[in-house]
Length: 320
Ligand SMILES: [Zn+2]
Image (cartoon, rainbow, N blue to C red; front, side):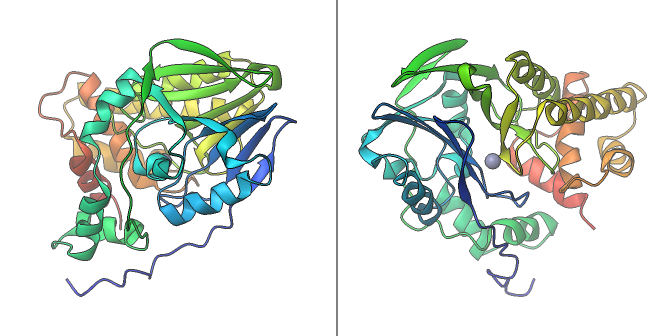
């Protein structure tokens, strides 16, 4: 392989802190590219909660500069990590005063996450093959220098209600779906949900956990809150119809994949067929491999690959 140009694939989103109600804001990247995650802010009466940080220290500093237009940074006493992927947690060290909350399942899954040094190494010295090239294409332009992974400081299970100033905030443990344990942050009086990667907007959902049924259930749980505004982990804001569309496409893929599994079709063939039939116009149709593999796992098929690298290899194999 030739030496990769580490900056060739750099998209240039222009994130902004968007006010959703008088106490809620969304940090929107409006991007379906890997690694450009949305975040959230709830601020009231001198207290603030941040939903997720960013992939790099530079991107998190940009977020925190925008937060300072709303409240002083030392008011941010709580960070809720929607899950443990680096694009939502690798800026945690810039909020040393904050309690970092996630679900017990999410925290337990964190030990399987790829670290910043490992990802940098993969991008700088890629091996031959489609999977390393895929990683370089999508992650090679990020600078993870000086990132120290800060794990959660407190976990919860089920539902937990907390108060930020005068605002009631509900933390919802969604269980395994996108990741080993996803969390949503619901602000009931303002009908806002920060969904993390339980929702992707404009791009296909990636299933790291092996449970596509968990992803479908999570979408329904989000709708059951009665909220009207949903901040996805990636992409543009969603309304209720948008969340239902994500759920329904996941269900259609799961149904098709289960049928292929029951007929004994090899996973790679099923993933290719599903990409042809279900890609639509959403970005990253190669992620349909991860949904197909999860459906195969849930159908009880032996030998289905699992784990981060197996998913990357499966996705890369579906790219042109
Ligand atoms: Zn993400």
